[in-house]
Image 1 (cartoon, rainbow, N blue to C red):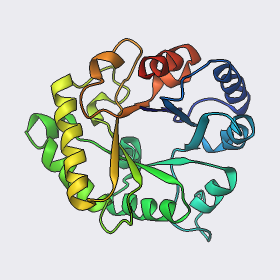
Image 2 (image 1 turned 90 degrees about the horizontal axis):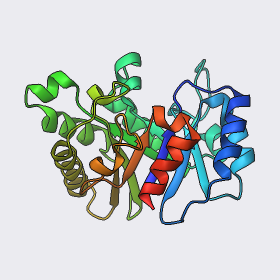
Image 3 (image 1 turned 90 degrees about the vertical axis):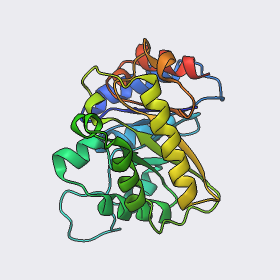
Length: 242
């Protein structure tokens, strides 16, 4: 299992330092891979404190160019220099608040792979799309565009299924819905890239109380939002995955 804590726009550098030090006091079995994706301003602290530990770290976003006149952006080259292992691309909040497209997600993934950073490609449908029976077709379109022409080889590639209506709302998809979506994502990706291995995380109001219920067939871990801001809650989810 893989558990990634997405802090979103939370925690100052000082708060990040305290959190990471507390998390490092926990003892986790190597059967579960653990990572955090802090804000950009806390990445250097994460790199400093997590170096040589079993816990990895990454970024929440990037741009697809290495350098240039792109005010406010951060490149994969910069993330690699900091020691990032992962980078989220296509998170629902990036898509719906900032208008990111599947093509932009693809270009970011290509750039990250070029610098040997593992993209975590996020996909998911809105409540309206699910209620109108379009969930699978939406996932198909997102995956087809975002993974087109990627050179994956036989490496593991990580995606996250996050039903948009369950992000930060307290609503959680039902186990049959999760299983259907995860299995579809894996099958679709295997058709596109037969040699690659795919892991799909579930993201959508994951808590210590519901992680057991949603750990259905096809779920390879969790992308944890709000619960990852608490060492106690985040550690509890990790311990379940061991």
